[in-house]
Image (tube, rainbow, N blue to C red):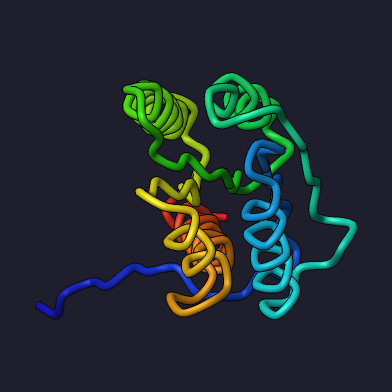
Length: 158
């Protein structure tokens, strides 16, 4: 008997997405958001099917993401932020709790949540990951969201 293979595809036409983007480190997060929108449009998503929510910082990502996921208005939520290490342990708390909270939302709400939160040691590393040397992680997160939204539709028989 052959193996059944189920996977998502990169077609966003007819899917709805919420992008949650932090204002803290906006020089980085604005680039991540532009990358995410670019990815969604390239895969066929209409502008009317994209909602962008701006929030203060990465600490607020879990609560806003939960609200959007529980609304059942979106096929996936894309979380974008940048937490850059400083001289205090603040980085560890914010990055860790944001990641944990976002993961919990995805597991509990059943809506795909793409993690596009940069956690870097320097501003230069963040810039590299927001469209310079290392590509754009906002674009990558959006592509993950498209694939997962399609996969979940298939798994749910839609």
